[in-house]
Image 1 (cartoon, rainbow, N blue to C red):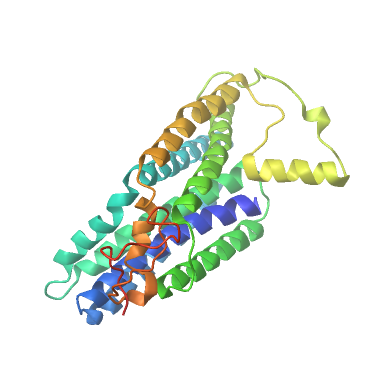
Image 2: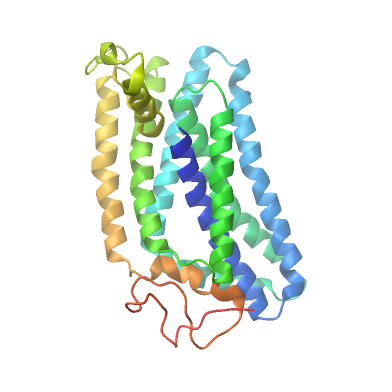
Length: 317
């Protein structure tokens, strides 16, 4: 559970950090540093979204009946999967357009008082925050964790790591293959999401919303180790990919169908997009935001040294 939630927070946090870096670098580039407080205000408000959503999803169902809790839990689990699936597929297909889209929105927002900056930051970062809250809640619930301490620590560690990496990329001190990171973390999240699909379907079956509860595909529960390294491995498997030793047929079919459909779509999208696409998000934030002629920024295809050519100028202060 720690690794899954850590990686979710790291991926979403790094994406949010890169987005903020693009916005900050653009304001510096156009000489509107006076709007930076508005930008950070939008980011601060966006940070409250996961706290509010998490509190509602955690404590809201306490007054419900068991069946109602199962219906809500199953529905929110499937909704979380839908959001994370949309996110990884969207990143695979449109990462190359993200930087241009953000700067286009900023171009109109910097005119006048710049109040639109708050909304751009709120929407861009808030989306990542909401996805993080829902997916972490779903992974925690699917592993039937009795304490929120481990997930909370995992999320905080992931966000802290993302902040450090994002600041390092902005300062030009860190060079990472953003494309490879999002590609492999996307595969991992899809595998985790498949387990949440299975768990969500089980919740809806248990609440009699879907048929088939009790029609077990197999029962390997007697193989659960009770001690030693076997118990450690089993616990990790349950926490990371939601291993279920006694699923229904619908859960097995849902798990398999999700992987068979979504994983190839993601891999195809990742192969088709330009290798530079994900790194273009960092192109304008490397080297602290001023314009340089060398453009020595991480890129996955520019040349053997992973630097952008001279015509792709980076933004530094």
